[in-house]
Length: 295
Length: 248
Image (cartoon, rainbow over all chains, first blue to last red; front, side, top):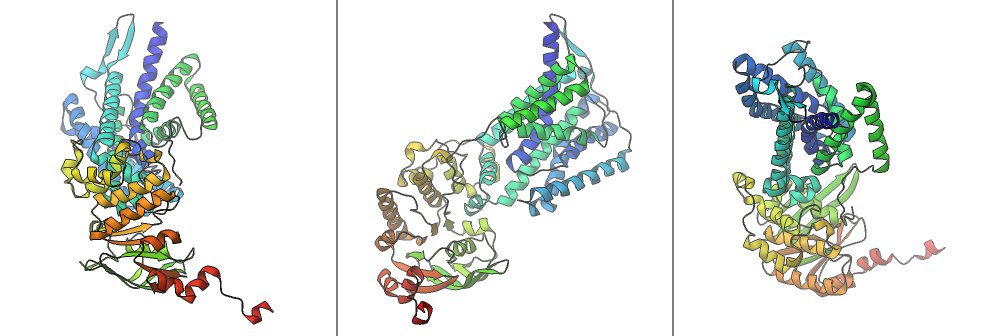
């Protein structure tokens, strides 16, 4: 029983990481339908933000706290720049967007190698997050994983709140649903696009900060995780935040359970097979919106 | 208030001339119907006026030149339109749809605040178009006719002074058509209305003036009776009588 519970929690913490990296994509890819291959590099930028800050701020705890808003702003600004310079000229051309942003991803990776060096760098985690929490029944949970889980859930709650209840969120959804109608209703669609991209990319920065707690920081870290993030968004149902959340945790738990009974690489294979099978059954993803739309 | 003036408007898509030198004068307060066979360039005309497609020539409304402005800037000058397909924000509620249309003048900082109450202009529009009962439904679940009414409601809260309606009664029942026609009449009191419509019965009852377009050009213009009597109009709608040489 303890074993199942501990694997379950491992799965939830993998899911939390998946959720954090997929959350930004659920905006830029899920809502705006932009395939941004450089999203992983925004995550990397967030992680390197922690590294740079720790050169200035010696306290690991303080640097982590300060890094969250700064990483959000840094990654968000990179996203806005990318949207303004390239992506907005490519709306409705998904293949071109994919190639162009992939090129940007390669450039950013190389830039990271030139600035920070090719080898991975290390950051210090605050003492509070290096230990583990002992629960009754012999369960041991790493504090950093709990932190990531809380961070992921907070980010989901904040994003949901913004999208569902504020008029900023309404505008984002309006532009996403019908760009022309939004424009003739008087919405400055270009500005809403940039804002959406800022938030989505900023969330990638937050994910980057979280990743410094559990793994190495390197130029290629974004590439390694971006595919999983896209999978989560697709399987969850494009544009459906709820689906993204559920699928992230489901995949995390599946991964950890299968991993325990087999090996890491076999687990990945099995997870991919499950995803392919699932998409054969429901190509539209877990959740879709039913309307009487004629379009 | 001066109405809508279009001078020598041309829209070209990859070499295909969709609108070919259209001149149009719609005085303030007019209810102008634009008719013509499919592909005559009616919708493209509206697209050009609202800035959705690039055009040359000149368009002025209320002494503002419209061409070259961004779409949302044109909308903010009081130009509102509906789409042929009954375009509403499907995944937002009826109320939220109206909010979007009403909300452009709000201060950016106030955007982060959740809604307190329904603004009076929005509540008024809901009543006018008869959608109060379904205000919290997703717009995507509305019936086709209701969506078209919601579109008009959005123009009302947007405070549009020039209404460009693309087939507002397509797919509506007779009673819905009558209600829509009455609504148009009331709206026209302090607005300028331009309607694209294929429904001749609707046109006869509610049009004040009619412009007939054909192949990107204005073919004929005048009252309903004048236009109906125009032999060129009869020709494009019914086909020209074959001449002796063609029969042979």
